[in-house]
Amino acid sequence: MKWLAAALALVIILLQYRVWFSEDGVRELDRLERAVAAQRGENDQLTERNRQLGAEVRDLKTGMDALEERARSDLGMIASHETFYQVVPPPPSSTGSQPPARTLAAR
Image 1 (cartoon, rainbow, N blue to C red):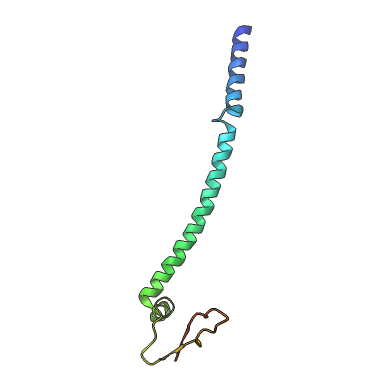
Image 2 (image 1 turned 90 degrees about the horizontal axis):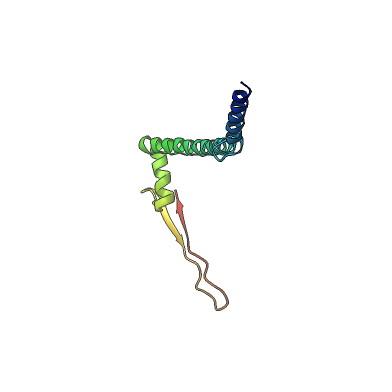
């Protein structure tokens, strides 16, 4: 009977060693838990970005203000009742470089 108890104790010790010290044991579990937490954080950021993009799409589909703002900022368009003014910089002097041209739109 003593040899059976010793064999069972040896099996338990070997199984515990594998749980605590092998690559598939507690260390791997800890690494996976950290990876899951990092992925959840990234998913939360992407969910927020998707929510913002969805709101922008809805606004562009329904509101003319957002569409007008996008046309002005991205395409440089002006409305029909506006006057376009372009400020032309003076000719370059012999000492410096030429600054970039600026454009203005007035209502």
